[in-house]
Image (cartoon, rainbow, N blue to C red; front, side, top):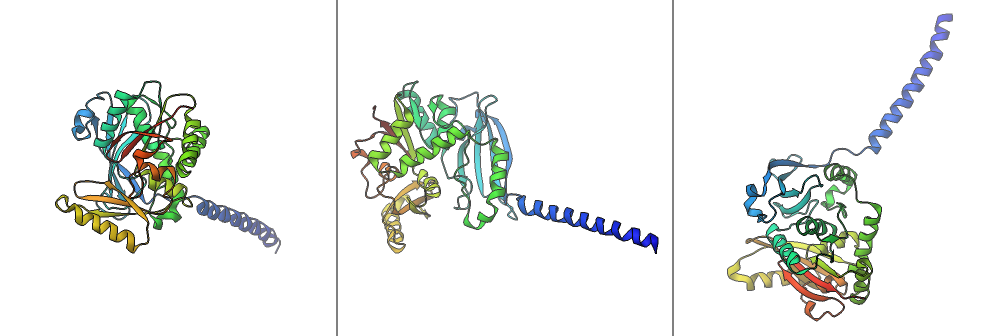
Length: 329
């Protein structure tokens, strides 16, 4: 009996210790997000001459990578993207094409429109001017023009994912940070929030915040129709927004407009604007609230008049990009 009496306390200690280890493991599993439901796959890389369709001949020193985006249990890619980098600097997303019509981590953009935009900036904007724009566009402008911008870092905000992936948002954030590198510095993140403040304010107040961000330098602000969706995710109380893709038939534009207007009315939205995705499709952005925000007033909604703005001055437009000069103090 004596040996058994010594064994029982030892067994109890082992069970307690094992219980703590099990609890610790369960806590670790519950607090550690699993894998993201998608991945970026590098499918091609090289110099700009290998990617002639991007129109980057004026930037011969860039290195370009093409990625395809794959989702769990789906054999075909759901999106295609091109990234570019100069030297040892972090890569910058140049364009993104969704192959499903659903937005995932980024919004659709065309490299052809971007190249035209940055060529105009290099030609007309003074070298000491500051360019204000959303962080993703800021990084593109910085890479391709060398002009000063507010956001040289990758921010990853807001997280753009389908609603059915919201419960995996932590895993997605981790994967994005692992892919793109360290998050933006705190001061840049503060400025991004202030830039969002400007875009959701009324025209007069918003223009004042833009001037505050620019300081005493000559300043220009670049907005794109896709900024609506990004801002709507970041400030949902200020913009009640939806998007929908429509097939486009260049021979029947009147029919397309009627289809878009009908969808707007049937779904109780007040106004809309369009983004060209390709020769085959357009994306409509619809607002029920937020029409009086600075961003909405800067874009071609059915009820807005960008040319008539006086607090900021429209100086250039191409594709989905609208460029305004911010008046001096």
